[in-house]
Image (cartoon, protein in one colour):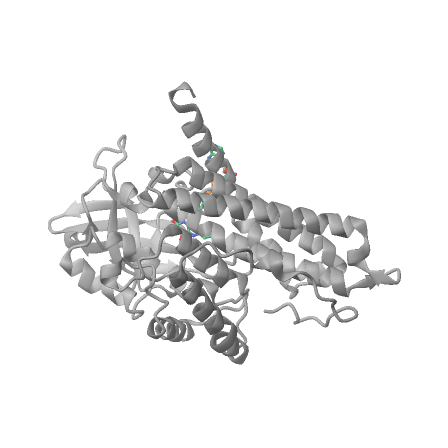
Length: 411
Ligand SMILES: Cc1cc2nc3c(=O)[nH]c(=O)nc-3n(C[C@H](O)[C@H](O)[C@H](O)COP(=O)(O)OP(=O)(O)OC[C@H]3O[C@@H](n4cnc5c(N)ncnc54)[C@H](O)[C@@H]3O)c2cc1C
């Protein structure tokens, strides 16, 4: 989908100031080079591919087309860029990573989550490489790194959402195997994944919480993916995974038993921050669309951008977005400097998700009726950015984390 799927309502646009969409670049030369190349890939080859196959944010590519994108991205050197350097990654700092991801999302491309396999590729396994056995490397991690296979991350269940430790899916030891029963909910990428990193309870005493992580093959007997529901952003890349006496060899246990949550959430501070550039990138698209519409749309004999009410909305959008972006970049620099950053990362996620949604809401308002017609880009961005206030830890959970760190033992 692009902003022009519905005819432009009024006269041609005057030109606004581009400075608000490309501030001074603070990353490394390497990151600048990657951004130039990856955005050219998204705006050129992948935009053509999307047009050719009728792909937009709400009509996703099938597995074969996605794999074509992953492989092409790998051939160009993007797909594995987040992997550890010894596996071919670029060794980007957190700041560089954030800037590259922001630029990818600011293209507005429906392929944005796929160029480095964010949903089902290398970022899902990179951090696990140091815990994996040689067998796990060969069978699960390398095929994902090489874009041959796709993997999802399965933690959430009906009764284990914000309370992630309360997983009921059980892995019971039986000789050299574990037998797994249970159901995972809302698992991104599962409809087209081959493998999952599964987080399951291995507690023998129901009063205890002992959670372990496993590599599982989603095509093996006793496991199936049930998809078919759509999120409010109109996407169907999320599904449930059902385990019915699924038997996995104990060699597929990742790390030590009982360390599953630590493994799964081990990089939560960085991962939380790394969702922010997607929100900021998409909100930047909304701001640009709103600015362009305000310059183009005429009512009462003048461009609506000449009304102070519209100017003030745009001013607030630009100011709040700049502040959220500054917090994101500041947090990235702090993480690069080695601070713990748990609260800071939650602050960035809270601020970016709430701000990005407000920006999208105002962008819809500025578009008037056009903004609430399905098929306009701002209408999609509004629904998409609403979701980030829930995903990867709700705003309330971020506040809990910040308060816990702030108040310490006194809480
Ligand atoms: C599109 C999508 C993709 C997802 N992808 C994945 C994935 O790939 N892998 C995966 O494992 N999970 C995934 N999830 C799950 C996601 O992480 C959870 O939905 C999210 O963490 C919230 O959990 P919940 O939905 O159970 O909400 P709940 O935990 O039931 O929360 C409901 C409400 O209660 C509030 N609340 C809960 N506890 C507290 C508290 N202690 N204090 C204050 N308020 C509280 C929440 O903030 C929220 O407002 C995905 C979800 C969606 C919708």
